[in-house]
Image 1 (tube, rainbow, N blue to C red):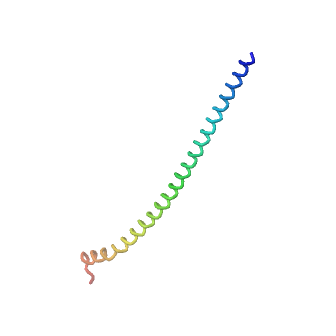
Image 2 (cartoon, rainbow, N blue to C red):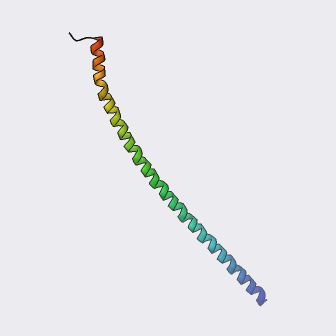
Image 3 (cartoon, one colour):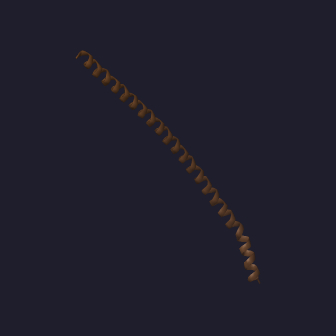
Length: 84
């Protein structure tokens, strides 16, 4: 009877150790996932900053193109309707 009781205690201890190891592995996996999410969020912020900068450059180039088109439009109008 003592031997059987000792075997049961040993088995329970082994199960407890395995459960603890599994919990530690799960915690490590959660930490890695959180780190990956942090890196993804940082990349998204960086991409947003770049997209905003590109939008500003695009707006500036459209403004410059519009200003550059004004003399062409005036010239075309002068050709079609000459000044008297």
